[in-house]
Image (cartoon, rainbow, N blue to C red; front, side):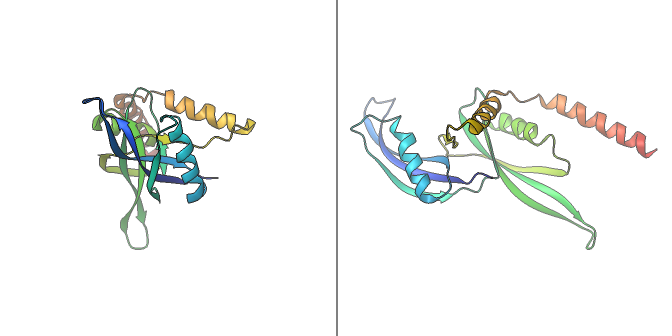
Length: 188
């Protein structure tokens, strides 16, 4: 079953690190849920861990997020929205068709987000371009784990992905050049 991600905007009081005062902040979070009701319940539960018992939260908005995939990377603290255009050639009309998908990639800066996007897309068989990468306002992502045995594999896979370090783009370029040379040898 594929995940449905909900973007939840949460308003709460938090400590301002600069001034040491409490201020009201509205921040977006991403939760994996099956319905709006579950998304509301999950974000309330997840945020309770960050707040004291006397603090209250107000959920100001919940909407379905437009992300095809979420990719966490270790030692990264910001989220970036990568727009990936998949290119398909329509043989009837003779034109290229592009279909866009959006990935949420964890990175420290735009260059690293680009490198991480290329790393994620390296096994893609078709052609693609990355026309845009923007920093996302998403503060944190909360995937769903039920705690059942079959979900332990899912937890381990998520943690492995989160702990992974993307390959260098040079290595990927080298692999692409090797593949291109093999293809050209086969055609001759």
